[in-house]
Image (cartoon, rainbow, N blue to C red; front, top):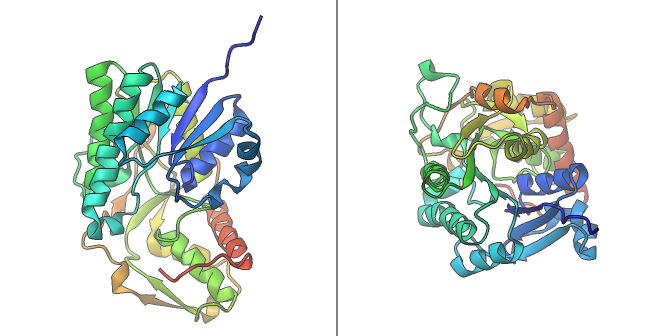
Length: 341
């Protein structure tokens, strides 16, 4: 008697920070086959730990399509007919969305619609995770903290507006077509492989460059007063796995986030404390790093998700900061080309 085929997971955005960590988690913790959707031009650096499996065609497979390409997305879903889907791919940088709003809206809203429509056609039985964002809540008054799932949306960037559309599309496909679609609003999450356009990763990169004498001892910053609750990306991907495996509830939406709340300035201080050059470094506000509007109070109420799945963070803030900085030190030692942005 032949053994049943293992479940097939599709990860859109597998080459990103979260997608690559999720693929590694699933490879280590499950017997699932992992199919990753990525653009042909996407850097593959984050998949370094998976290249052996990809080259051997063992459990990890790459498929090429762009979220803006309806036929390409449809073909990948038809070929893979996934049992589980993690829709992570997006234009994910809020500041960029101010200069590229149409690209952001197309990629994130219409791209999500393309993915969900392809799933409705070819894999309606799939358990689907649509990754929204805490940015949908935007400008939250202090008396609404911590932010629960019923807090009104007040998006503060074109990116956040695009994620409102993503969020609502997930619920629509669950309600209109009976599909098992769930939405997460993940609050700040970081760690190794974080893109350098995000504040805490930019700080770590600049510290690593200063330590290597590849940058003057000046760290350029934006708004340091914004309040954030920080989680580790490795805790985030474990949460996403529990989302799709612990009694999935069609149409459900969950806030997910860490337990350490601090200002962006506090994050900078924590990273500087890890550097032997900390006494030599000065801080300089760069107007180009400031958003026209900032979602400056991002503190989540995660009780709905933790009660449903039992998930709690395992990584401490200190460990996350240490690992983020060490990741950038390793990149700088390896001579990876970086620019100051």
